[in-house]
Length: 367
Image 1 (cartoon, rainbow, N blue to C red):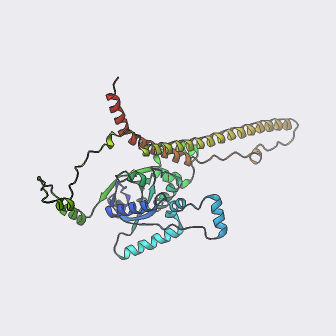
Image 2 (image 1 turned 60 degrees about the vertical axis):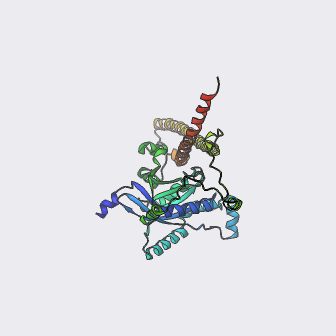
């Protein structure tokens, strides 16, 4: 029975409301620095129940003056970089195990089910995210990464999504080969890197009962008239609520502008990676042409030596004389393509309401 339950894939992630509040509070407090933390819970018949969470402490890895100078030169001692790498840091792994041990002592779910991170405008598909999720999913396949977009949540609705790495990408990342030949053989594309898991926000029965028991104030039909001027001063007359004219605003959403800027940056990074691969192909073609010339010359020399009844020269000596360039990894290009897709979906969501307004204005304009 345990083996059957272990083989059931994750269908959805059930997140407790307390966990959501903790993640939102931590990510908002550290914004714009990246916030990360651990998730604990349990898996029940394909539903990953996330019942508690705790943040990771950010540890400064530079201790000596020499290390500080080196980190300052290499721009590696950035708060966001340290926080993004926190889930797989050795000190935080020890801290996580210690926290889980304490949670087990007070009868709280003490099974690690993943980690969470904050994002800005959907910018989370990067190598650090992949390394962190691979670190968790390598030991336990039933782990997820919760991504909380602080900038999107500031518009008034919760932006919380769950992701996990696909099985095909896990196998490819384990081999560490992201060459053109290996990608063609495995048929792995940028769409197969991460898989989104549906999220269900869950409240306890006590909290649900308390919410239903809260009495809502009833609006009286008649407004009592004030008896004196003091009554008006003590309880001033409230002005009626005005209608919202935000829906009539034709200005472009600033979040749409920022998303378009990030989209252009990702496209430029994708073209840079594409140019690097084209440079590798030109170098490879040049070296292969040199090898072909050398082999043709060596065959002609061996034919002349055979006619003179002399021993032939080795024809595999080109492996020592020539060195073929190593193909760069295509992983960075795949991540850029996946991030471009993420930004494109966001732009599509932003433009849905703006396009409707533009068409409405166009229909009412006089010809």
